[in-house]
Amino acid sequence: GQLRLQRALQGICAWSMAAVARTCGHASLTPLLLWEWACRDSLWAMVLAKGVLTHPAPGADSARLDLVAGAGGPEEQLELQVPEDLPELQSALLFAVLGLASSDVAFATAAGGGEVGIACRNEERCCHRSELAAAVTACHMVQVLL
Image 1: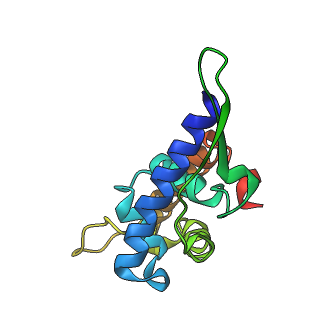
Image 2 (image 1 turned 45 degrees about the horizontal axis):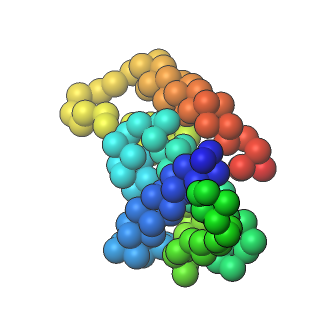
C-alpha cells in the first residue's frame, strides 16, 4: 500500500515536470520556472523535486511494483511507465532546485518602482531562504540532494 502511494506520487511529479520540460526545453527548466510552476510554494517545489529526483530509472528493479492478488491468487509485477528523458529531467531539476535560494527567485514577486532599502531586501531574502530550509527539512530532501 505505502509503496504504491509513493510510486504514484513519484509518477505524478515526474510526468508533470516532464510535460513542463518538454514544452519549454530541459535547458529552460530554471529555478524561476520551477518556482512559478510550484505557485511560489516552497513545500510544493520540494515535493515535486523529490518525486522526480527519487523516481526509479527505467528498467530498474525498483521501477517494478509487485501486486498481490487477493484470495491467494498469483503475484503480478507491474512495470511502471517512466518518462524516457528521466535522467535529463532529473539533472535539469536538480539545477533548478539548487537555484531556488537565489535572489532572482527570492525577489521574483517584488513590486517594481520605488526604492527598497537593503535592510528590507535582506529580510525578504532571509525569509525566503528560511521557508526553503523548512521545506527541505519537511520533505527530507537533504539525503536526496547529497
